[in-house]
Amino acid sequence: MILLSLKFGEILPLTSKTNTQIPSKSVLVTPSPVISESPTVLLQTDTFREAVSKAINAANLTQSAKSPDEWKTVVSQWETAIALMKTVPSSSPNYAIAQQKIIEYQKNITYAQKNAVGSK
Image (tube, rainbow, N blue to C red; front, top):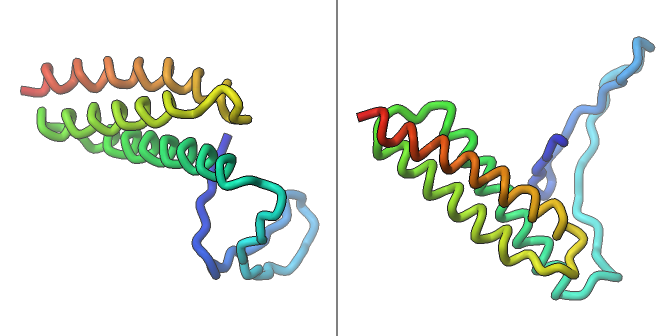
């Protein structure tokens, strides 16, 4: 799964996935109003998204971490991501994914902790 984060007013190029010749165009991405979701559902979604964001940050830091302090930061980011995933309620449509991610992120913490000790 590929996550894409867009900012209000961000312009993205559209490209074709086929070999047909379609000229490149740009689209202005604007947020659509949410009418049917309650504030509780939005909060649950935001918590899940925040957890994913922390995990992406941890994964990116993992690519460049070398010193024990850098690895400790990676561990901290994974811990935060796990804590946020644990707050996703069972009524959330993201609950099952959150539970899987908790297990995945715990494995990543173990990896980062080993590197924190081994990089001294």
